[in-house]
Image 1 (spheres, rainbow over the protein chains, first blue to last red):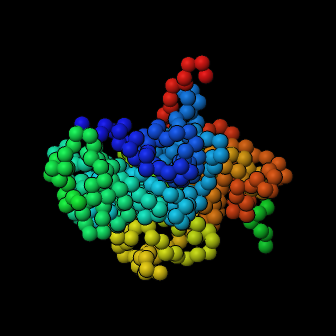
Image 2 (cartoon, each protein chain N blue to C red; image 1 turned 90 degrees about the vertical axis):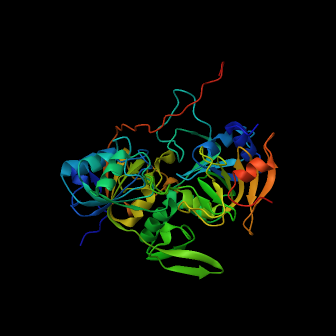
Image 3 (spheres, chains in turn brown, orange; image 1 turned 120 degrees about the vertical axis):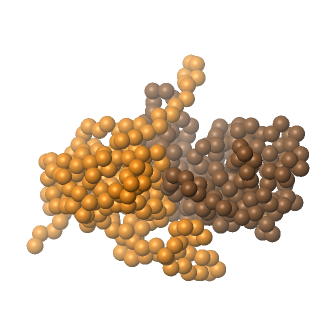
Length: 208
Length: 240
């Protein structure tokens, strides 16, 4: 039984220390917020918000209070708003403890590719490169391989890089893996019922 | 000689946009459709200018906001960080009608901040080892690599604020703030669309988000569409 999306979000949320400032990327990482105890951590959204709360109740949506995915959100007591230069100074300046980001490819040395598919439509960079190179710790949450079994945990990224050697942990439906300086993925844990052989086949770099 | 800080309040959008001409570089505040100066955006189309270089995080979406500029052929180049689902920009980029320069969002913001603060260029770690470093000076400082990025100034900044006094001191609302205050510092002429216009003294000096020093013209626009891009919500629990 591999991890479900909810399991992956719960597992990623378990990486968030109490009192941390955390930026959750668009997509699956956003779900981590559902598994954080109230007041456990402070969510940063790069469009200029710290202390981001859950989605508003129906009928209370405010088009001028959004997250970086342009979804309507709320702000918790103690929250603050600020401009984009300030927001990215927080990121670049190392004031954001952790970023949990989606990924298309992660290399065994921790390179991250999450902004463009070769030959695909260019969606843009957004805050991806700043978050990846600026946050103190970067965790990637992603599918372990493509639907066709193509590797996404690779020896060397073939997709355009977001930042080099920044990912310290990868959480997939098959388990938890750490990139290492010598180019292997260290197996931290396997999802229930997943064996090492299956993971090795679906991983483009050696496991240790 | 008169200073630029007399009589900033204009009685129409057209008067507020006086001097904005074809070929200029124009910054427009907003994160997607959030915090757009809606009346000023319409006013630029009404003016009939062409070949603008637009600096904005997204250049509109869903056919709204700055996407109306793309449809009206106002723009020849866009400097932005994210296109996303903005089909009006994707199609014009693909056809070559509009040139698009994509910049990391934090670098875009800092380039504006630098322009407003008299810093011609700065070193940043963002983009090292990626396509962003192409054609840029790279330097190792204290063992880490950085890229040299240049300041980004503009002829005009068109921004929106919640409360503005007649000197141009202003306060923003929630995440509608985003790029607007830094754009105001980077532009030669900053025009503010004010939800509320108040007399000087009505905003406590300690509560001013951006000094009126950065603001040259103010136009009062009380009504806004404020469209949602993604309206997300949760069900209210029973009894709350």
